[in-house]
Length: 106
Length: 115
Image (tube, rainbow over all chains, first blue to last red):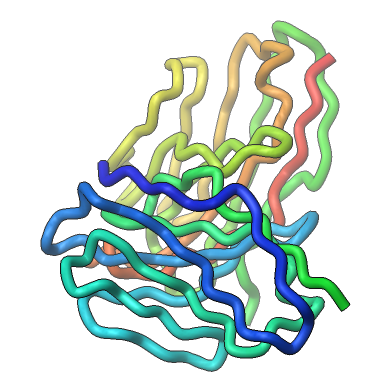
């Protein structure tokens, strides 16, 4: 399975953009990249996924490097409700890492 | 449209006992995965069920077993409970076929405490 590296924690000021990086250097050519987040006391929830092209939805944007060895989840304007642990999951969409804990400062 | 539901929400057991956790998938989903999440850790994949068969398994001992019913609901059984089995157990559902592309929807989890 593709291994991932994410920073343990990040901070952002409210209403500012946040860029959450993920390295997945062992990803194979057909592996999708999924991002989930887990709010306190809840199960994980889907954020976004992509294969090669950058993707946008109402929650976030996903920028995928041309060599696909890394990706960045972009929250365009962080709100207090975005405070969560964010997980990047390449490959078979089953194996979570330790994720990045995002703190949003009012 | 009901999402993924799990029961019970909380459970307390003692070492050596057995436990059964239940999960009903989101409407239209036929694939169920189970995860264990220890405090402060990411979810760890236990196994996945599709068409009533275990399709893939993570690095968990045989004490962890499961079942999927014809209506796609699923059970997770843990035998000979250890203190280290205390965790949040999450169920996730998705639709079949292109599982690597399909979004997983998670339930709220069952918190198990083993004393």
